[in-house]
Image (cartoon, rainbow, N blue to C red):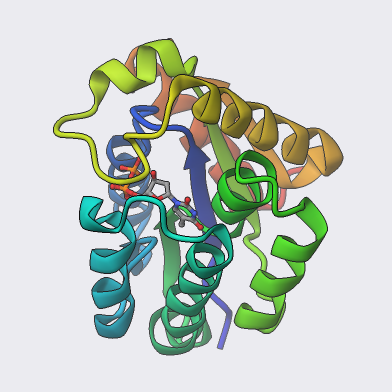
Length: 208
Ligand code: TYD
């Protein structure tokens, strides 16, 4: 059986990842494909429980290493229980955040180091990488105004989010063939059309 396609959406706060991941899921379903839409931290029962700890403002000041390990633990369970079984059964998986979020937030912005955080996530996932990562790039000045009641991560100062943004952009520069970088300034419809066209090229085997 053919493996499903694995697509990750990444970006800062208020970039529109949830909207765009849902629109891509609709597009793929219209093409007759089975799609599993999921998110991180979360996407499996234990991972959702860990999410509760990670985003709870009661734990402000959590040590960066504890934070990185919890994100990695949530991801390990998500991959084991949800992502890999879906891909193996031929279902496409779209995840709202994945490894790059750990690299940008914990590796770069919390200054734990890109290499160590990447290695931790690759160990957690047994090296499962997306076929395509869509990076929705947004200026945090704007993105942070689009969020509701801030959770523990969103409550970090603006400089924290500015570093996150640079972290994401550097990752995309490092491996451009695995990324689609789009400015989140456009309308949701125009952004969705660009993403759908890129994913269609992947599925149809175009050289694009
Ligand atoms: P969420 O409410 O899902 O945010 P968003 O709607 O912006 O995706 O909260 C996830 C938060 O956790 C978000 O601030 C990014 C952060 N995060 C990390 O710091 N590291 C990670 O590995 C992941 C997956 C998320």
